[in-house]
Length: 320
Image 1: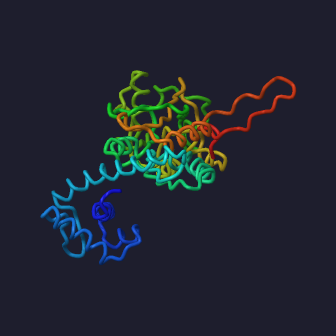
Image 2: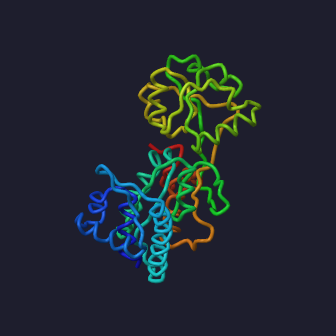
Image 3: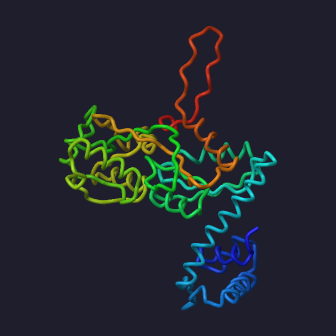
C-alpha cells in the first residue's frame, strides 16, 4: 500500500484543487491539507504555491508528482499481481485511449466487460495517441489503445483490428459525387486536419507521402483536436476531412455528411500498447482479449448444415 500522504498529494496535484482532491478521495478539505502539509514537512520543502486562491506545483512538487505517479502505479501493479494469484479479475484498471477509440469503440466494450466482471473499477483517460503513450511510459496507465503502432521503445504493441479512413465532406461539396478519390485530387480542396500528435494525422501523413504528396501541399484551413469538432466543421462546408468510417456512421445515415473511399484505400491498425518491462496483470490481459473479441470482424456463417452462426462481434466497421 502506497503512503497515504503520497496518494493525497497526487490527487491534489492532479486536480490542482484541495477541494476536488477531497471529493475524489472522500476526505474533508482540512484532512487533505493536513496530509499535504505532513508530506511537505517530511521532505522539508514546499510542494505547492498558493496565490490568489489558486495552487500550482513548485519545481519540487513537479518532481514529486512525476515520482508519485510511478510509485502509485507500482503499488497498483503489486495489488494486481497478488489478486492474480487468487484468480481474481478485479481491481482498478487505468485505461488510456485516443479520442476516436474512446468515443466510438470503447464505451460498449467497457460496459460489457464491467457487467461480466463487477469487481473491476475502470478509469478512462482520453487524449491523442502521443499523450496516451507518454502516460503509459510514465506508468500512469495500465493499458492504452491507439491508432497505428507505438513510437516509444519502452512500449510493446498488440494489433487488435483494422480501421478504414475515408474522405468525409458535406453533401454539397465538389467531392461528394465521387465513388472514390485519388490522393492527388485532395490538394485541390480546402482540408480540415487533426492536430499534431494525433495518431490519425500521423497515418494520413504517411499515406500522402507514399502517394508522393507532401502533407504541406494540402490546403489546411483549420486543425481540430477531436472527431466531433472536425465533423462539425466539415458539415458547415469549411472543407473535407479524412476520418475513420466509424466516426461518421451516424452523420452519413442522417444525410449530414458524405463518405468517399480513398484510392488506393487507406487502412490502419488499432493497437493495444503497454510497458514492455511491466508484467502484464491477469486483469489487463483479460481486458485486452475481451476487447479483441469485440473488435474482430464477424466470422462468415458456416456453410455446413446445422452449423450455428457465430454472433456478430463489435468491429471497427460495425460499431455504432
